[in-house]
Length: 173
Image 1 (cartoon, rainbow, N blue to C red):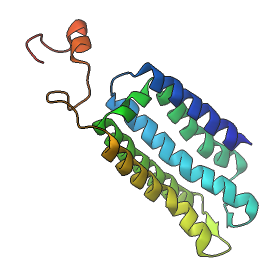
Image 2 (cartoon, helix red, strand yellow; image 1 turned 90 degrees about the horizontal axis):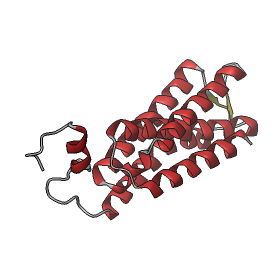
Image 3 (tube, rainbow, N blue to C red; image 1 turned 120 degrees about the vertical axis):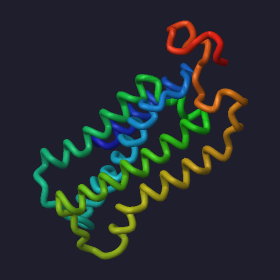
Image 4 (cartoon, helix red, strand yellow; image 1 turned 30 degrees about the horizontal axis):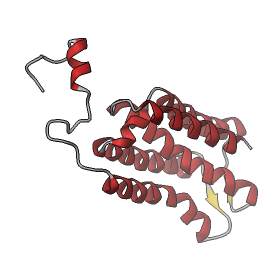
């Protein structure tokens, strides 16, 4: 049930953030990707453990922390406006790379630190490794559907807003 609540809150925050259509923020994109990738793997592990397909030697508090920390990271980035990165090619590339890295990091920590073992066979092993490949495929597919950035806006930044805040000179455009 915790998995459904976390996923629902994350989806709602991303939808709210996407409606605001903020500019691409690289740090928020990385936080969203890392949190989302790690959360994807942890959701799979959380589903496999009660089914008896995998066993973890970590205590319950550590397993809950491994589920909640990526969710809080992704939800925080989503509520701060990271969904604006899903509307630009560089943003999607950053989120995709970070999601794959987050999935691989969570997978390695689960396997080597927490001692996750498959008790049934190859199906749980494939299920734990699948989120990284799915994030990569979905990100590449989504990026290919987006239009290319206009000349001079490769980063997806709002140049007028940067000039107003004094972060760039008025001669740049």
